[in-house]
Image (cartoon, rainbow, N blue to C red; front, side, top):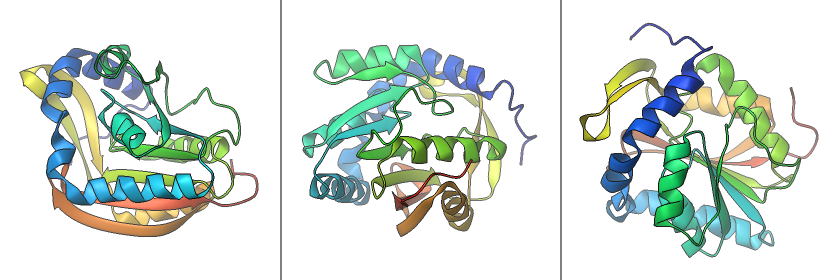
Length: 223
């Protein structure tokens, strides 16, 4: 396990790293879902849950180049993307001009309380240090309507590794966190969520990944 990240700089490092690799990232991951039937099924179940509750806006937080946002839109969901990297957002807007993409941080979502009908974080919590996860999940709970679904995809394990080379061989400098499913469900419980389903799998999306569907409990999220 590498040394723990400096939490005062991880947002800047993530922004710079993904700005650097944005074009290659989009090209390499563009069709990855085509090879990942279990992930597609999870997204379709999530979309079905949103539609069954009457629909409404859905935030894809940490959307990257917008491939998950676009897939949710294909499933009849009013999805938009939010990403820390301005360059990633530029690429998402280029590739999906009919959809909305905003620059923003999951640590301070610029969304109104209880305004979201659903939220997806697709392998986007992997760079958040443990000490900042609670604040991020509390923001998720704040913006979701009571009972609304949350879909998380994450790397399973118990280590943080420094990533120095990224897509296309470009330099990056950020930590990739792998977490035990029990830790994820405990964090969600503390933030005001009830976990409904949890699956681990190996696929092109992750050597060992977790897909977790939860719902926002009624009441005020804990801070």
